[in-house]
Image (cartoon, rainbow over the protein chains, first blue to last red):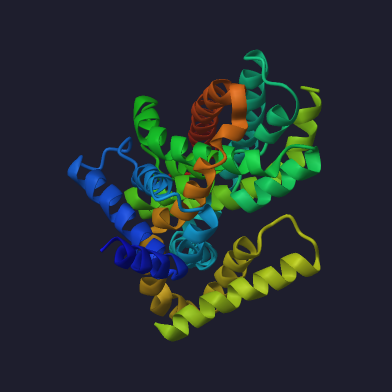
Length: 239
Length: 117
């Protein structure tokens, strides 16, 4: 019985099917809990799925590389999904064109505020060196953030961790925070979420409202470019 | 459906090729999004036809971040003793960035008379 199980386990671990299925099931559980909780933003499906899978990998002593052989098919879809953001953007194009000035102002203000406040808070709490520098691009989509971090002398791995955590924080706090501020304009709500919390924030905005999702996508794209310019300058203030 | 996926992947490929050949900081897919937007503006009929495929891809955008998220869990220890300070910085700066971004947007929209309808 035991050896039979081991044989099956060995087979499954070689195949991408197991961890691909596990990823979808973990997300389905997260999404189910999110719906059951009345779509409350703090029951975040990404966070739930990640914790369940991390637990499963830990219990089965499965290395991440084995997991990723299956999960890579899901991960790969990030690229085409990003391209597909052109559709909600096109749908809201007239509104986007009309909102050029608020977008540019909001982008510059939020992008610098994100970088400076992250560095400022961490510095005040005693974080120095590589970890501090790695924080600067944390609001930007992962591939760009890792590139910026490396060029500044930070650690791309640490930055990747900070980027994902920032995205989840943004997705969780955006709705209650914006309600508290009394902001009802979907453009402003989406744009600020995309600038502060990149793709994970954009995913959350798209769940709530298509216009918010379109503006979040624009915010994410523009902030990737602006942070590459601003981060090196703001980091200088903290060295 | 297949045609639409091929178009989307084609623009991603084009974006990757341009980003890499010019050494741009913008990732290929973001560039692909911009190029596909131009394509939609030139051919509104194609844009309408592709809407449902694009929506399908985007309806579970959150799911696509799960594999990267799982990878991150293994590196949380790398934050070391700074972990809590960094978490505080990430939460604090997210509150600041969303607040500053949304308030600035609304303020400038009011000043320039740009309403949301």
